[in-house]
Amino acid sequence: MRLFLYAILYILHSLMEFQSEKLQVVGPAAPLVVVAGEDLILPCFIKFNTSVVDMRVEWFRLNVEDSLVHLYMDHEDRNENQAPSYRKRTSLFKEELQKGNASLKLSALRVSDEGEYKCFIEDKSQSDDITVNVIVEAQGSQPVIMMENYDNSGGIHLVCESRGWNPEPEILWLNREGDTLPAEDTQIHRDTEGFSVKSSITVHDYSDSNRFYCRLQQIHHMMETEIIINNKVFDVWKWIVGISVSSCLIAVGSIITAVICYKKELQKQKQKAEFLKKLFAVEVTLDPDSANPQLILSDDGKQVRCEDTKQNITDTPQRFTYDRAVVGNQSFSSGRFYYEVQVRGKTRWILGVMRKNINRKKWIIRRPQYGFWTVELFGNQYLALDDPDVPLTLREKVEKLGVFVDYDEGLVSFYDVNSRSHIYSFTGQTFTHKLIPYFSTWYNDGAPLICI
Image (cartoon, rainbow, N blue to C red; front, side):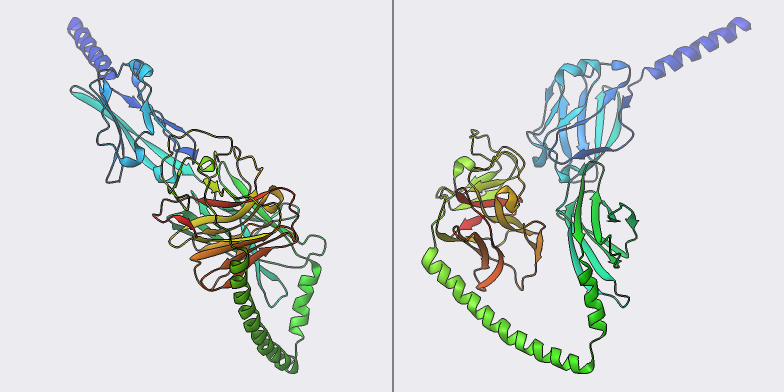
C-alpha cells in the first residue's frame, strides 16, 4: 500500500512539472510611460527561455478596428495586413527569438500609439498571451497666464491655459516662495490634439511677493509660466470702487469716443495693409534643401504640407532635423519686404521670419531673443510667440496671413489679409543678420501652406 501511494505521488509530481513547462508568456505588469517621438520596446518573453523561432508571434492592438501591429510566422515577418500607421515602424529582435524574447520595437512613438497591446504566442496546440499598456506622454504648449478681472475684495483673477498635453498634466499654482496656492476652478478637456487645461485663481496684494507661477507637470515634462503683478495694478481696484455716478457718465462718453477712434484706426490699418502689399510685396519660394523630412514641397516651391512619415532624402547642413519647418529662398539684410501665405484649412502653423544663421540641427526655441519673430495657430488659439507668449483675440479665422518686415526700423508686423486688419507687431527689435521667411506645420490635415 505504501509503495502504491509513493507511485501516485510520483505521478502527480511529474504531472506538475509537465504543467510548469507549458508555454507561459510574461511581460511588464505596470504601464509603460514613454515620451512621444522616442522609440519603445514592448517586452514579451517566454518563461524558461524557450525558443520562439518556430512559433507564431502576433502583436496587435486591443479595442481598435485595424489592429495588427506585427506578425511573425513560418520563420519570417508577415505584415501584409499590418495597420498602415505601423508600417516600417516595427521589428522583432531576430537574434533573440531563440532565447524566448519576442519583444517588439516600435519606432518614433506617436500619441495615437497609446493603448493596450497584446503579445500572442502560439506553438502547435498551445498558446499564451500578455497585455502591455502603453501611455504616450506629449508636452503641450507653454502655459499662458491672463489677468481677467478684479473681484469685490480687491483680488485679481488669473487664468492659466495650455493645450496639447497627453496624458492630462497636474496643474499647480505657486507663489514666489514655492508654496502651493489653491486653485478655484480647473477645467480639462480632451480633443484630437490632446488635453487642454484651464485653471483659475484669485490673488491679492502681498506687497513683497506679487510673483506667481502656473506649473504643468507630467512624469517626464514640466513647464511653468511666471507673472509679476505690480502693486499699482492692485491700486486700480481702489480707484474702480470709488467711481461715482457722474464718473460713470463720463466713462460712457469716453467709450463712445473710443469706438469712433477704433473705427478710424481700423480703416487706417486696412489702408496700411493695402499700401504695404503694393509697395513692398516680394515673391517667396520655399527652399527644398531646408525642409524637414516630413514636409512635402510642390514642384514650383510655393506649397508645403506635412506627412505622417519621413521621406528618405539626403541630409543637408541647412535642413531642419527636429523642427517640422522650411524656409524661403529669399533673404533680406536691409529695407522692407512683405509676403502673404494662405493658411485656409490648416489646424496648426507657425509663420514669420527667422535669422538665417540659426542652427537647424537642434531643437528650436521660437522667441525674438533666439532669432524668431512668429505667430502661431494652435487649435483655435492664436499666439504671438513673444517672451512671454501673447494670446491674440481675433474676430474671425485667418485664411491669408500677411507678413511685413522693416529691417532698419526693427519691425515685424502680421496682418489678416481678408479682413485687412492688423494682428500683432514686434517693435524695437535689433536685426544684425539676414532674415528669411519661416514656415512650420505639423498635422497631416490635407491642406498645404501656400505662398501667394
